[in-house]
Image: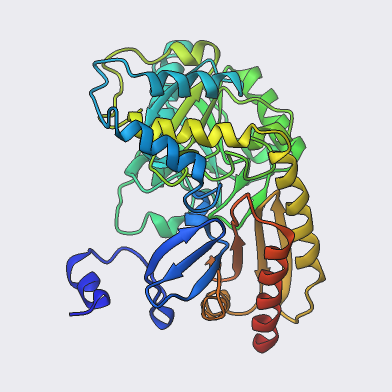
Length: 395
């Protein structure tokens, strides 16, 4: 039995793999991956914004090797140095005062939802449990996280949803303000909507949400699971807007390829949860924390984030120059880019894969580009050349 048949037999079918372009990845290095036949692919998916430093970055690999030789896991009943050092790094480089470690973006958002509800009840009364999120948002696959996700397609079959969520129009401050009431405890948004189609927030929108939350005593929560860790040209996307949240969540790119999630909070919000309120068995695992510490070390090296900004603009310019009949809109910030077309986006992604370029399609129409942050202009040129040929055949 070949591997594809074994996958279909033994793994629950929850992933929409591309059946006409099956790819078994065997190895990765830098901006490339190789399949079992030795074919090389330019990876502009990066594990969905996980491999922000590319595949097997030597600094991360060395940190993981060192830590696995010392300690791989222990209970959070005890202290470990990598966890504490990573917490210090995150706090020193952001607006947060304290952090909570878990294993994924969905878990981080669940922790933020619990924190917001407890905070609301303590500060605004026992009925203050409602959270306003944005249409087109995506916050994870757990039950509360998909309820926060204002896309009905993710709700189907899992009803009833968790009570207490309301949905407003992204980049429309009045839409959010109109939903605030005495039961509201928080507003939760992505600074850049990822799964919704790569929509960056307008500065006045996030600034307005900050003011709205301050006026009503609400928590402002930013989901930075996909936009954080250098993806937009800043360590955290909110830095592009001059707006600081009360709570933010991280995952994906922080672990350098290993699973990690973070909920970070400041001020009174940081002291809301107490022992017994929340926990995670693997949260703050020493090996993963060592990897994440190495990621932050690399991102903090002189000129790294400036490089992201530069090549991000170069990529946007090259995509803007593309000539084809199906163009609708180009959106993005840093190296977080979406190209909406009127044609079959899934076919474009599949055809690009056949020509050695990995990207993905969201919503059937938007091509999403998440290249490693170490990408160079020559890699971008190669990707754009493939894309131009594939789009020309679509016309």
